[in-house]
Length: 175
Image (cartoon, rainbow, N blue to C red; front, side, top):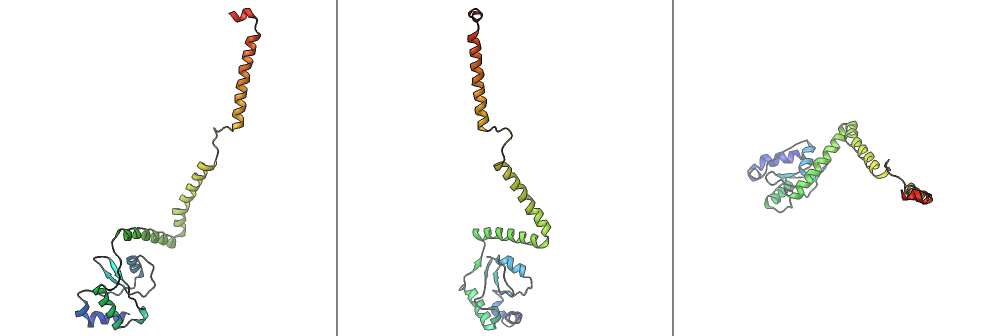
């Protein structure tokens, strides 16, 4: 692949240099970040840096020849290949979720304890709070049976007072 790229960049410079720059890189993370996908290496990718569109060839990378690469670059230049990526709203939203996902994965890969501290501890605290709010009875709550007994007790006390007043002699009632 590298040899085909070097040949295209040097021997066909006058044809492709105006529209394309060739780059060989071993860092797959940069390519993954551009495409917001996890790609297997080796990868051939054409990137338009102004529109953030990228293009993949429709042939297997192992089958690359100067002719297939030349045909691919001509179709990209002529606009005959569907671009991917860009800077639209959905791409920006996808970028946010991709960055969040890769950050969480990188934290998990670098330190399992840090991951548990950052995500496990807050999850446990929120779970305990939700359980406490939803499932526990309050200390001030009185069951309905007890409140019914108290009301009956108040009614009996009121009846006893009336009975006492009616049993008093007539002359005391007048006072």
